[in-house]
Length: 396
Image (cartoon, rainbow, N blue to C red):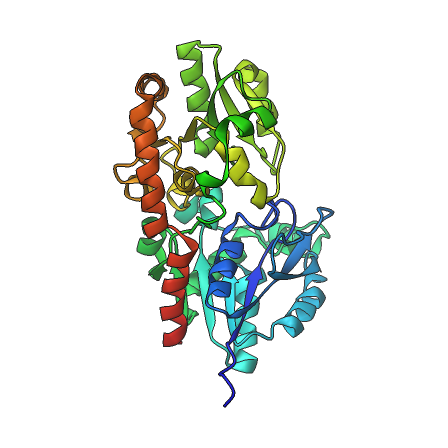
């Protein structure tokens, strides 16, 4: 008797470039975490998406198949969309974020094939342009320019007007999945927090002192921000705290940097004496890098953009049993529980005091880190994601 063939899931991503889903070699962003969880369930998984502009497409560091298509502005986008739609042959279509480039195409495919569509929302796109206050009310002349000019605003597939339309259609998905309470209140859906591969991010596999030597960090007490700095992520508050402490043995290591703008350069210009910048590494190298940290910092500011996001650097540190200093923003206190240190957001003075306390009581901090790993394994692992996804797909 033949065993039942497991369904295929097609994950649709808007941006498969090195600035989007590929910025950590593919493995450290939501779409790839979901793909890994689905593979745990022995489903066939493929990620498809667009690459806009001249940035290179991601090459997967795992067994996940990735298929990219050149993305263009309208009207040429219609032809590249048609190519991608032909490739969407999964039994289930999993759209990443409510965008025309993902969810819109997935709904069109469902019209033709009746295949169920899951919508994952891991960010509030409109928060970048003012959220609920944003409106598009052009004059007739401006509207004509936006439509007819080759660089007209409405020719961009991710224009806020299209994002607003897609958000308003989110309820048309068969299932919505989200990863923060903020997004759940806004869109509803099933809560699937980001999971970590705790077998890869396992401190027993790494030697902290050797990792420090490898990256030239041995002479310092290392605070690490293993992600892309943005103003709402609060890195400036840590740097202001280091100004207060004025301790030359403390350094903030930023890993990878921002693929979006010159914000890194702005930070270095003002606070270069405290910063060590490491280049971007593939996701499978990140555990070794995190192993070199003495303290992981997640200093999110209290903004809509921060509230909508699940900071992956938090579970990087938890899984690697590192002491963690974070802010009381969004889901962070619930994720950490009592296994880390919390301060108010936008409070350099509190951050400075807590950094000093942590290094004066470092054995206690190490014990908290060990408990953080246990908490991560239980609540924030790829296995936990797989368990929830299994129930969702069974219901579909």
